Amino acid sequence: MALDNLPAGYFDARDTLRPDAAEAVAALHRAGLRVLMLTGDSAAAAAPIAQQAGITEVEAGLDPAGKLARIRALQQSGLRVAMVGDGINDAAALAQADAGIAMGTGADLAQEAGDVLLLRARPAAIPATIDLARSTLRVMRQNLIWAVGYNLLGIPLAAGVLYPGLHILLSPWMAAAAMALSSVSVLANSLRLRGWAPAMRQTLAVRSQN
Image (cartoon, helix red, strand yellow):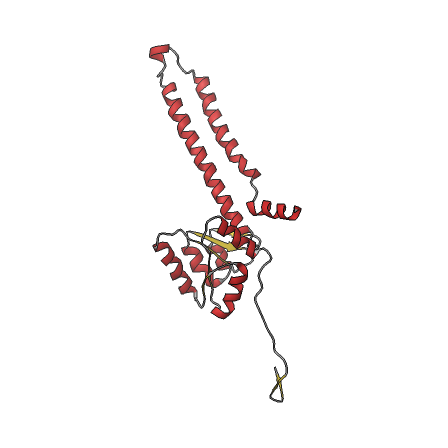
């Protein structure tokens, strides 16, 4: 701003990090994930934000097509890619990524393109989402192993494998009870997820107590 062709003042507008952004990035790194920043901003504007957040890989000046191309390049190199975004410019990349995570406060197009919608625009929810997904997959694998093992054992018994040597047959009511027990076991194992809590929340709680 100038008066009579002499500098009188200036306005300095800067992006600021959300309070939990740096901790969220650190949690992703601890989980063994590679974190990149893809932005349409200039390199000069992106570098300070990336440094504050703890991100070392920054690609600036990307338009929507550039972000999409970068996601495809990562996938073609054999990586599974999760994309986090909230703007219209992120929609194509969100749709292309193996897991698109959209912020609930972002553009409608981005929300529709994402596979996961975070209702709150809190970076801490990103590692929590990945942690919950991994926990869910772990429980699904446990249920599958249990169900397959249970049936491998139960089907021969129901077919009378013990009858020739021991003259033992599985009665219909016992077979029905066994199938019910299998379903109850799978359900009980799945319900353990109700007690799931983000690891990041536990870390923050410990720090607050200290």
